[in-house]
Image 1 (cartoon, helix red, strand yellow):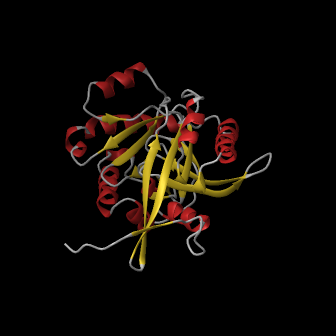
Image 2 (cartoon, one colour):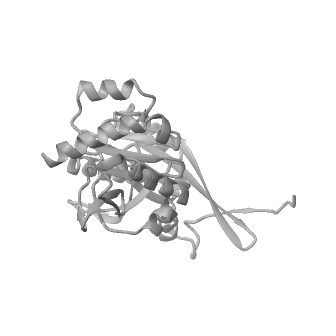
Length: 287
């Protein structure tokens, strides 16, 4: 293996690789931050009272939003305050979501960590240090989490239904999990036999005669498929799921749906329970 000398460059002092360039890289591929399979939701959002929030990212699996602020060079007090202020405005404006403030900077100083420690974990904030490394004629970015957040209970998700297509989801997830989604739809007995998949930007729902009917919806990921089933939370359903080996996520209180993480083996080991839940959801949805 050949050794190639690299060079750390300052984005703040670069005329070519500026803050907008870094922001675009994060929005093109949010996974580079190391926070999981996040989705890009909004950029340069104008907030009530003034200011622009750089980027909003979203985790559909754990139903969580990240308010991301980017600073080139060292962190400073004004940027810390702005990051927390934007987070606070967003959580007050959308209290149905869980929110986390994220600051991305080239240099996370010890003074920054001292200031944040004063909040004693009351503010969920993640600090990520980014380094730009030049190797020959190429540039790469390395992100290191310097400060992790305090953990809070999961809350809720977004329901935007901007239409897309199958190709969009094959790129966003994988062809394999798209095929798995189709298999589950096919194996949900008579409950879904008259429906087709409807590809939206943030989830895959159902349609019949071009009319949406989302008593269930799917979110394919890289290695599994999340199935949302619209049902009121009851002890009976809880017990049914707990007595199975289904992999569950937190119940979605706002949209009133159970959430299951499905894999190929569930087609044989848990399909009857899933069919039962979907049939009940379809019946309740019509009521």
